[in-house]
Length: 501
Image (cartoon, rainbow, N blue to C red; front, top):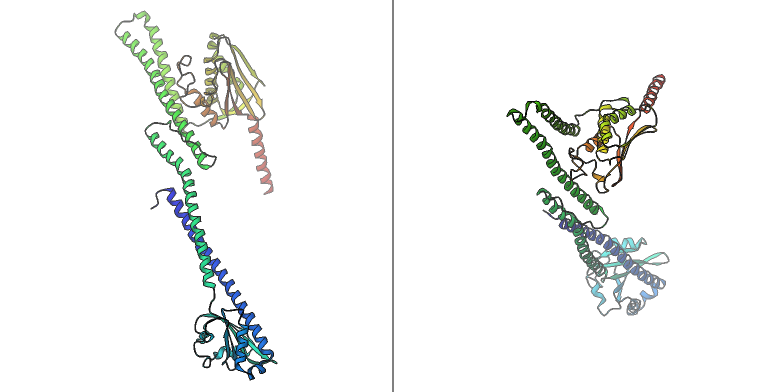
């Protein structure tokens, strides 16, 4: 039913306000009504009580005297309360005197003529017992309408002689309640208006980024990942906008890497295949002398190996991403492995006349890892370092003992990596040498494979660089000694638990 957040918020707020108004009105009117009723009965009780004391002080003299004089006394006592009617009953319940300070005939307060009016027996019995009556209504038909009545017994020497009643038909309570309800209603209307404005502002702030995200998502579906959301404030919506912008940047970067990868792979596949096809066709057609065929077949073989390496890298990534590649963790000397990798690159190091340095804190540092995976990690990092080193520059492999871990780093002096490229070094298909000036054979998979293999060991790899000067890759591996100590500790715990049992 409700399609927009604004309508949902408005509906929710209005329902809350209406419900609160009803509850508040019920509570306030209840308290106001009770207070007004108690106040009215208190006034009537004071007046009737004072009248009963005055009359009771000389009741015989008053009743035996002139009735008109008694009526004057009742009227006189009523002068301060024009809205209150006073009447005096004898002990049989008959009306002795009735009076009011108002202009209306006091007899109108009774349903029948004063001489015919009689207090209901139930009330007479209660008064005779000395009770003070506090009743709302018409005293079972004795009064002409709804009223508040208080009856106080007249006691003469502990004898019941009659009662004094103070009655008011003008309660004032309904007017108070009506005024209270109107005040609450006006307050609620103003609150609703203010809430409407506030909800509109808040919902607009909430929904505007969502609308922009919706439009951006549609643009993403069309392949346009450059759409950004304006970040406002520092709340959850702002954080969502930042995350969305980060997603946009990631998708944009991924799309760029994908297109670059397709371009690079296409080039890497086309070039060797063109070379292979050209030389094979030339040999088959007899365009190449027989004595030179071996030379060209060696070129064909080299190109085939190049294609094989590319396909192998792609398959390796596919296996790692699908979780099919399992690590064969075992203890081995990482220093010896690093030496083997260094020696395997001896020819390339000599060709660039690099100043090679190999440092190891100990002759033998054993780690717990997959040897083939670590060999691939080291080979890819070292290959990269040689590729981007300056001729005659410094080239260093260092293995440090870092307590429970071995820290392996490869340093080279060369073009380095720019600050804007550093966050993306380990992304797949990413190449900082976009001109293909130095990295002619790479497709941006080596460092991604390195990062994935290091992460598979539960370790971390980092890169530091100063563009145009140097670069250093560093990763860690768990040492064997820590694993052995842990195993021995667990074995001791098992033995100890067995002894306890």
